[in-house]
Image 1 (cartoon, one colour):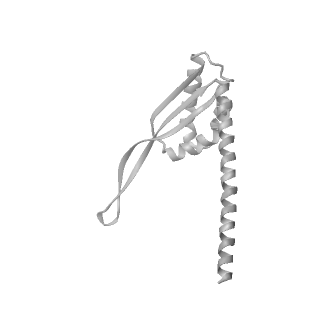
Image 2: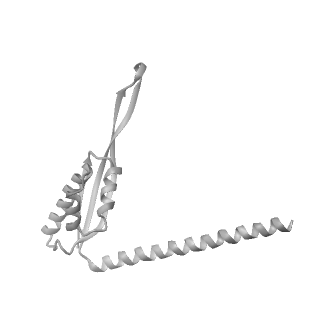
Length: 152
């Protein structure tokens, strides 16, 4: 079963919210809540509110708060408010106040959790193989160049 929470038009830039959300993405939601409450960032307060709402929704749906985990935490960009500062010589210096949307999806499906971890390990192995193959290809090209230049 899945439960989702969406918080819209939060007056914190998505870049700052992503820093905090990446910190707790791999933790269980109850532990993530404790970590966020002790995090000295303003963005953590917004994420705490969203996470508390998500856990309340999970409890309302009859899910055990100890067995749920994050399926997805999305921090999306919302609208930008355009503002201006006065500059020298009567000029205008524009800037944007950015806002965010937070979407948290919690699930208690253990099969999905194992599938997600298997996919992550498969992707890591594939990247490792590609990097190893890329290194050997680069070495072989450099040795070929050395042979052709020395034979001339």
